Image (cartoon, rainbow, N blue to C red; front, side, top):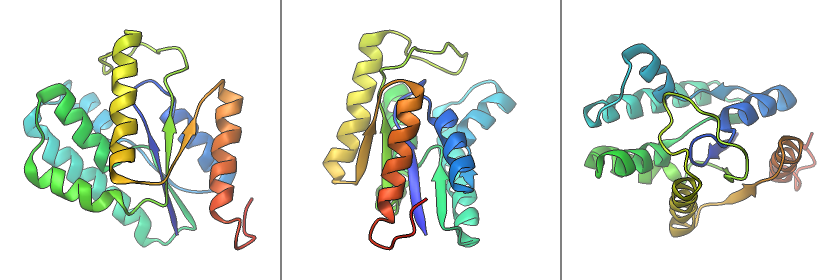
Length: 179
């Protein structure tokens, strides 16, 4: 099984791209639980981070247990840590430790650039381009520091879709099983 994480700051099209890839590859998507939590509770606090992280991981692991050929993750463990650090200045130690352990479990990270228009949403925090760039750099550094495999996805939506499909197909290039 190939586990692919859509990765990057807010409003970069992760959910939209995940849905497109799911349709293209006939693969399951694990949605972002933090968004669902926010919709149910109206806010997220530092105290909520462990429950959000554990539920995200539970859903991802349950989907992986079904052994799909490809599992698309609309968010993942490092994102939880990055947002916690960014918004609250800290992250619970047990969540940070588990995120570090889980980070190497992804076959590929698709790092989405901020070169698309910001889409306002009550759950989003950083519409300013300078803040978006700072966030993007944090996400990229998280991958680089851990030497995790990633492909930078940028450009207009059709280009992003083509780049992501090509990157995933490349995962199977040696086996001839690409689509």
